[in-house]
Image 1 (cartoon, helix red, strand yellow):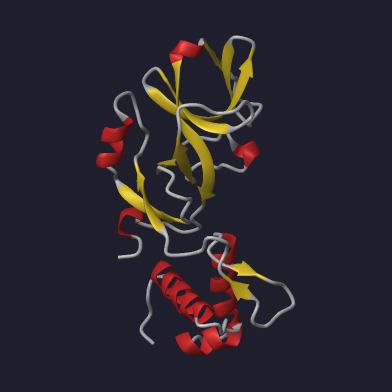
Image 2: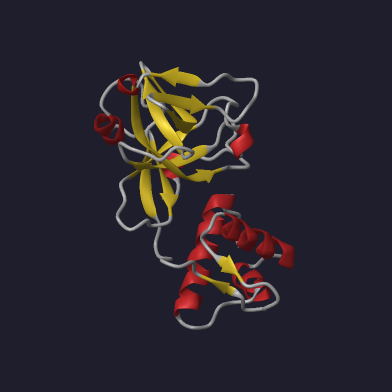
Length: 208
């Protein structure tokens, strides 16, 4: 078979497996290998495990036909990647998205995505270059990881409500918390997913 980019191959495998599952006959790893012409069964297994890691498939260990769709599984929804969300209107940033990220449906929630820059959240397994998926909401509970705008910049931090103060805590001891008055911070949303790409990918072209 003609060699395709890894992302396209994985998407094609997901569609194949999904169709088989919906037809009541989940494929084995070897059947995926044969369907896509891989020389080694480990190539098929690597793609399937990647889909499991991304939350698009669920694997029941110990069963040859153990792949299934997650609860609520269905076609992905495309979430706008809005960059830094500097000072200005979030709605406008969404309308001028630099690309789109496929994510699992979340019951009609309004979602957007940001690419993380910096290492302040490494303790929460959010690394430089990761893409966080954010549920848009103006309020959050203390202890939740949020995207908040302070002044001209948006930042990803853990929210702490202490007395009458709002504190935005990093997950890296090399960085100091940001302490602001409640009126000086705007909660843009709560982080609900983290996407990590092990090789460069043009998110705006994903799935095309």
